[in-house]
Image 1 (cartoon, rainbow, N blue to C red):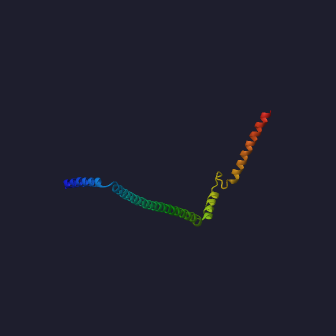
Image 2: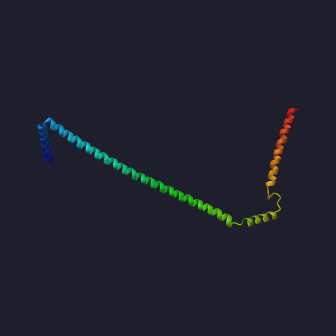
Amino acid sequence: MSKNLLLGTILGGAATYVAWKCLSDKQKNSIKKNVDSCVTEVADASTDYALNALDIIDEKLAEHDASEKLSNLSSRFTKTADKVKDKASRVVDHFTNDDFDKETAEIRQQLTKNTDPDIIIDATDESEDSDSTADQDEKTDSAKEVKDDKE
């Protein structure tokens, strides 16, 4: 089979060469133009087909990326919304279900029963007083320094 194919190729090529040499210059130019136009048309058609295929592939990839990003975004949003709802329900439960007045009353009763003088129930007055005392001490020290410098 391969011998017949080789023999047919050689004989076909020789016949084409002989036929080509028998043609006039005008006929040769006409055949060249026809072959060139056919090759150009095939190249244009294959280029158009390849560009269309690439456009379709790009569209599909963009759709896939967009849908993937959208699904990721929606899942993130859902998770965040669930977390916010959970925290809000915890806060609401804390403020609605806990009885602060009762708890603070119990703590105050326990503190009043304890006679230890180191326990201070309301420290705001003393802390403000201690801050002003510290400021006065600093002012007194700086005034003494100024007096010593003048003497």
